Figure 1: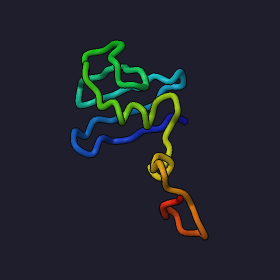
Figure 2: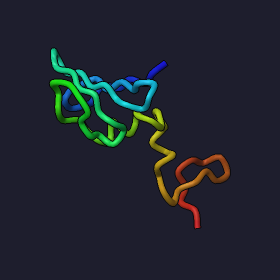
Figure 3: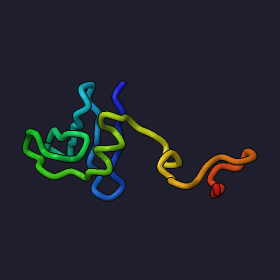
Figure 4: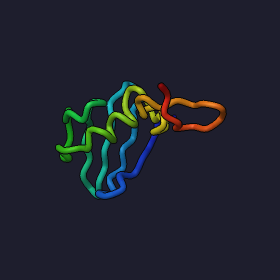
Length: 82
């Protein structure tokens, strides 16, 4: 099943497609973007690149995975390592 997220500010719906592209819908407008947020087709020509990355090729991943320099230590997630 494709990942779907609603943008917290615009209300646009970001849905990952099986081929790594992202479909963005807002009201009656629809656009297709690559996972970097570059427009490919459709009436909607702008998208949030971060949202596209979250639902695009690499799929939805928890934010904690992107915390560079943080690790899980003694069962406490988010403690700085090193």
